[in-house]
Image (cartoon, rainbow, N blue to C red; front, side):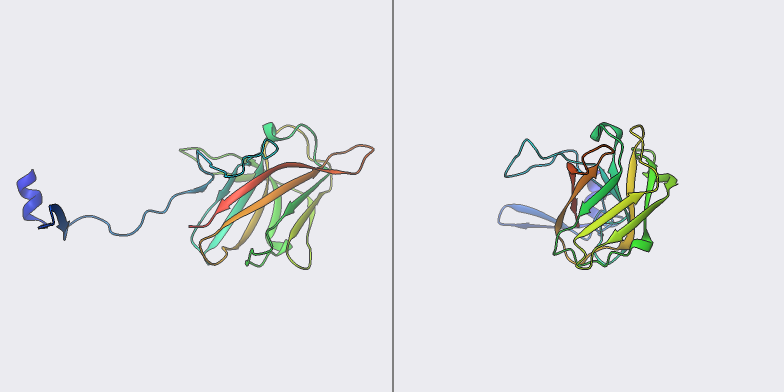
Length: 189
């Protein structure tokens, strides 16, 4: 086994290190991970009021066409949704178009399946002029049960950066105030 390995590659000893080059049958392309939030997240300034929300991207490569699912799971909210506001960082350089967005009920992906939209919820979606906020007004309040997502179809932004999108939800009731529900911390490879 080792002998056949050495015959198929070139081995050099430099300063006590063994360098192996020219391996045949190995893929030299970088691995592309699925665009989901990681299992562990580290924050320098840990705040007890910060809530991490689940998201899924079909691609994490800059300038590539992708679908982003910014998901609000059933366990992340305790009330129905009358209005959803998503704050966008001012350095986010991808063009957000309301006609390429939808509010939908989703099935959360796993090891064997991907996150996908199973039912589109009728809603009016607006993006402000300077592209720093997305406002979603469902025709009917979104019920408490089930997982829902804002689906955004776009070209990924340029460069390797990290973006924090915040979810503000207005619940039905007497006081028309939006409350913080959590943040999606999206990383571009």
